[in-house]
Length: 68
Image 1 (cartoon, rainbow, N blue to C red):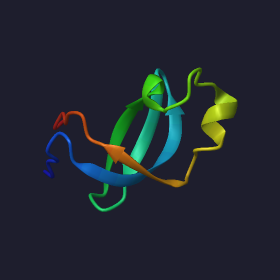
Image 2 (image 1 turned 180 degrees about the vertical axis):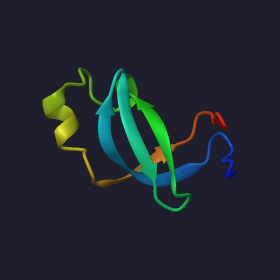
Image 3 (image 1 turned 90 degrees about the vertical axis):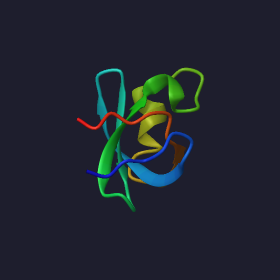
Image 4 (image 1 turned 120 degrees about the horizontal axis):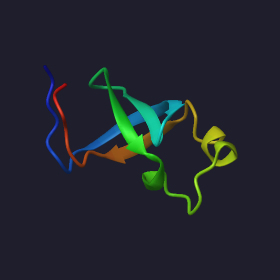
């Protein structure tokens, strides 16, 4: 199992919208992560706002990792 230390900067892409946020594919680690909707970086996340971020390469900072 791959583990990523909190604070690590990673590159990934938002792949789908789920309840409460988004799933992110972390490219170099080949694992999926959860991005809360409130962490997307827009004041009021909505379906329209999320569409402009879907499947684009973005930088993320890992806050914590649950090895499930």
